[in-house]
Image (cartoon, rainbow, N blue to C red; front, top):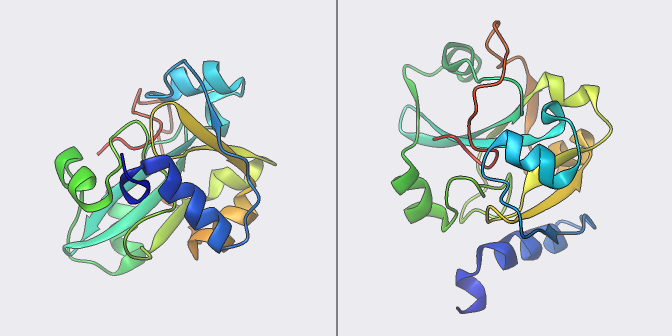
Length: 172
């Protein structure tokens, strides 16, 4: 596989370009779901980062969520002043980014996407993000995540909270 097509290399390249020294780690175990990632990484599910691709009025947007929280599309719609917000399909995410669901990272996209960060992420010193595949991840502080994504911390969590069993690297 050429370097440009390798999902992990895309994430590595992006992190290097923005001066982020977070080490990408790999595991034989899958990190496909939050529960899988929690076991593989050795961190509580709430410290696993879910990177979700949404469409707000047909524009791609990232929602970066604590592993135990669900995104509230109405809150995203209101925050972005959008008419309609919906989840992107797994097929679209892969065609656009080269990342498959279960390994969707917060960075490394063809374009810099608007990113909304779940405020609950800031309760933790470190969160664990997928790094392009369901076997690669990296640790990052929420503050560094804001810097490297250009994102905004906001309340986008569904009030009921609770784990939804969604893939850690995206549940589109």
